[in-house]
Length: 126
Image 1 (cartoon, rainbow, N blue to C red):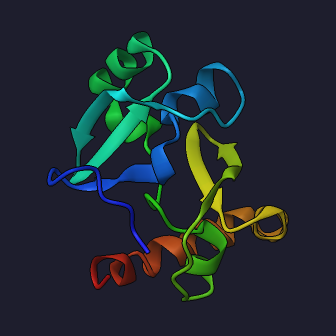
Image 2 (tube, rainbow, N blue to C red; image 1 turned 30 degrees about the vertical axis):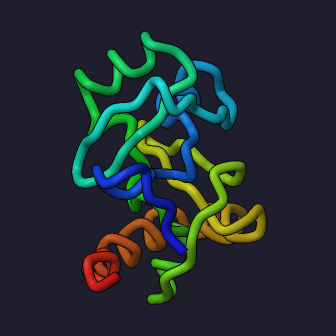
């Protein structure tokens, strides 16, 4: 079930800091007092400088399928992602339902990315 941040949109990636994956190399919870809204979602950040980096290039830092598992989407399913299971490939952040999804996604990376992008429209139905 999606988590709401007030009345201002859905909370993205369960409140984890999207920039921290790139700068710290780990999943890091964000703080409610350091938020930014983009693409109908509220993003939280662990540090103010991460919020500023995100504001400059949100499409770079935001996960490719927002709150959904990239591998499940490649298979045509909608599954909420676990922010602790993630991958950066070609400068893009992907999150998964768990470690098995990440491992499977990497086995045929280009094909799975293409399939997930084709199935992206399913996200909008939710």
